[in-house]
Each structure stands twice: as C-alpha cells, then as structure tokens.
Image 1 (tube, rainbow, N blue to C red):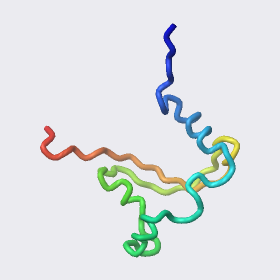
Image 2 (tube, rainbow, N blue to C red):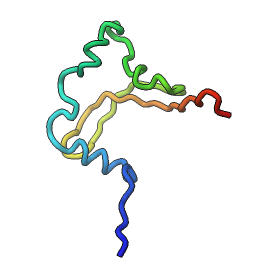
Image 3 (cartoon, rainbow, N blue to C red):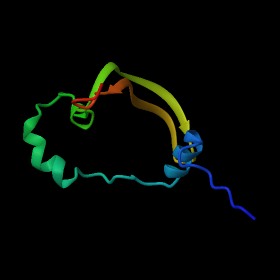
Image 4 (cartoon, one colour):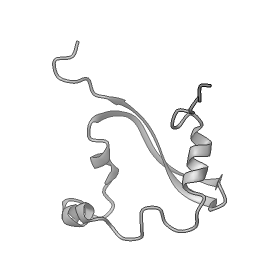
Length: 94
C-alpha cells in the first residue's frame, strides 16, 4: 500500500489559516537581533522590506488596507503589501 503525501503549500489558504490560527504573535513583538543591529541603516518611514527582496526585480509594489478573515485568529482591517517580482537571472546564465 502506497501512502500519498500532500506537497507543502499545495493549499495556500489552508496552510496560512493553520499557521496563524493560534492566538498571539508568531514572530514576537520585538525586533530580532539582526534588525536591531541594522536599525540605523534606515530612516523613519523608509521601506525596510526592500532588504528582504534585494535579489528580485520588483515590477509592482503597493501598500493598501483591506478587511480580512484569516482563520480564527485574524479578522478585520489589515495593512497589506501587494508585490509582483521576478528573480534576477544568475550571472553567466543564458
């Protein structure tokens, strides 16, 4: 008898809902060590996410608010980011 496994993220909505269903903050309420060490690099109001996506060519990046209902732990108005990006080709790649 063969056992079939479901690939990770084959159902993104359920993956998201399970991950964020528990009360509390998933990543904590304080900045991590790396962010604390590099905080002086950015001025208030600067776009910090650009560091996380430095290897991508960003086609579209927008901030917006919407009402969400994501699992039992998150209902209501949320600040969101919409992004469309492409991975940069590696050097020497055709």
